[in-house]
Image 1: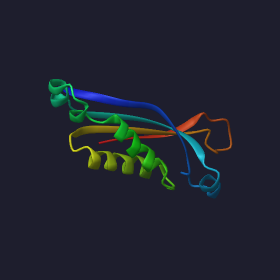
Image 2: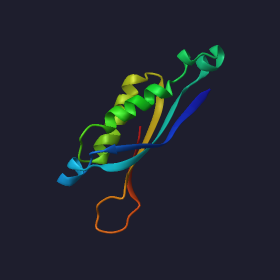
Image 3: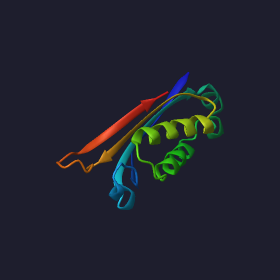
Image 4: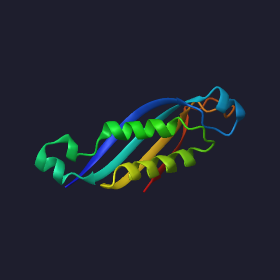
Amino acid sequence: MDAIINLENLEFHAYHGCYEVEHVVGNDFRVDVELRYCADKAIESDNVANALNYQLAYQVVAKVMMRDVALLEKVCASMIDELYSNFPELKYAKVKIAKLNPPLGGKIGATAVTMEK
C-alpha cells in the first residue's frame, strides 16, 4: 500500500532570485512537498525505521533552500533530485516553492513554481 507524506507550509528565509538585492537581503519562501512511497514494511513492522523519515526529508529541503540560486525551477529540481537520492523507496515527489511578496513592482502575495517527478 502506498503512503503519501506531505510537508506543508515550510517557511524559509533564503536568497533565491534574479535581482542582486535578493541575494543580499533575501526573501521569505513557503515550501510544500508531497512524497509517495510503498509503506508495506512500515505498516507490517510498525517501526519508523521502515517508514519514509519525514524529519530527514525536511532536512533535505532545508539544505537545498539555503543554496544561493537564481531560479526557483533550479531549486525545485535540485530538491527533487536530492529527495530521490536520499530515499530509494520514493515513487513520486512533488515540490511547490512560493516566493512571498516578490519584488515585481506591485502588491503580490506570492509567485510559485511546482515540479513533480
